[in-house]
Length: 83
Image 1 (cartoon, rainbow, N blue to C red):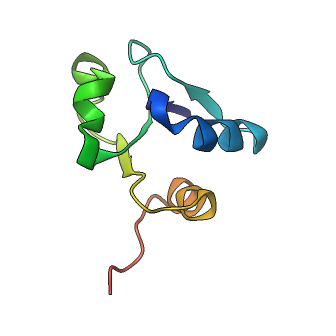
Image 2 (cartoon, rainbow, N blue to C red):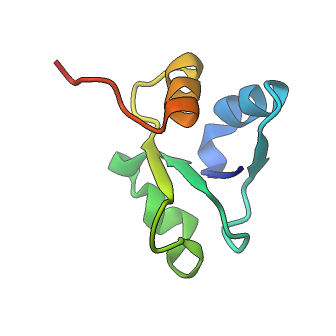
């Protein structure tokens, strides 16, 4: 699994690398997962329009999530309930 992550999320990137994930900042590499802050224009800032798979790419809004929550989403490919 290749994870593309926004440049401003270096702390999350380093923690994912430490946990054994393949993480890149290069949006020109096709990726399975995109982690960004959607409220700060995450997808636009990554410029990933040409490299997103039409089906199956998981987009995670880093928002207020900690590394354990992000890893849970990566492993289960689901978000927990909002309420």
